[in-house]
Image (tube, rainbow, N blue to C red):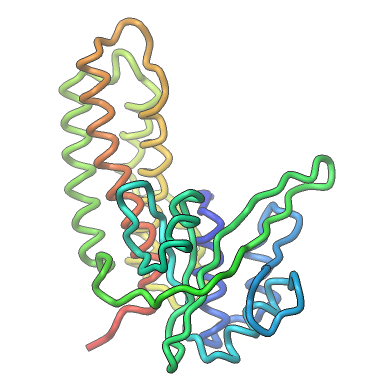
Length: 256
């Protein structure tokens, strides 16, 4: 099964709780996964740290209807609307969620902090702070992200074939070849279309492959080839991030 960022799991399953599509207990199990425990700090109405189930309950009291996922990087804070303090924290973490749908425009941003507990496992502390609602249309729709990912994947594959990537990075060539298959989609919980699951599966693999761009390919590769490889995979990584977010956020897209 493909690995999702923690914020993607929270947005997908926490959003399903806010829409009344899944029980809080089932959602907490899906979000926590292999971690030991998740807590939330900083939500109004909470006395210190609270568990995920209670945190989602507090958001439901504010009539939030979902959680949007952002996977920002320096220079591309797409999926965030501020304020600057929250945007900076989200960019530093590389991920965040923002509550959506409250009638009074209230929104909260949550950024994960991952703490290793040694033999006791992993604690994830979500830091909540005021955020601005993310306007619809500020990020690609699922349809747009799907099309962008398809183009980026084709162009990156063509570029890497031209560079004879199989000769000097066989593991990267093999991973790219596997993308041509359908693969296994990550379980997103209730409320998601088959298209969203398919896009997420491809985008998750793309993100994993793109991480290889930062690895040293070896002395047999020229500086020029390294630069072209990094550029091709960088474009692919950006399309992958946008597609993961679009797939997770798709139940909140306006209909009609």
